[in-house]
Image 1 (cartoon, rainbow, N blue to C red):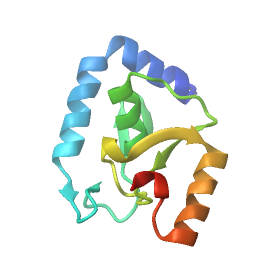
Image 2: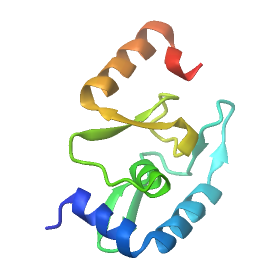
Image 3: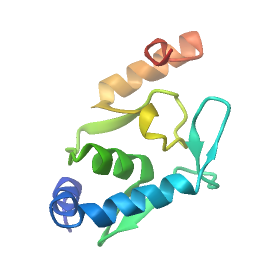
Image 4: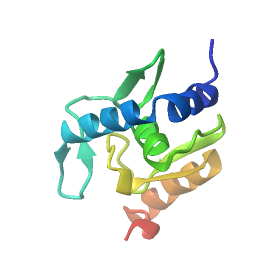
Length: 116
């Protein structure tokens, strides 16, 4: 079984143009809500299968657009606090502690103050 970081590094090195096309396809098949979130027509977080691997669509989009293979402990934070959102402008890399802090801020204030 291939490590996700190695899988993404391989994609970025050998199949970046194809991956960028897939990102464009994913983003074009979304609806934009009142908060600017780009959401797909799925009830759960959208997943992407690509070149023998699978990951969350937002993680795939972030990695391909930023040309960055993320490690296991790095997560994609939704600045909009909408886990269904795949809008690259709403995505930011962080760690699990950052992600939990975002949840606390959202619970306290209703939005992430950094997103305003």
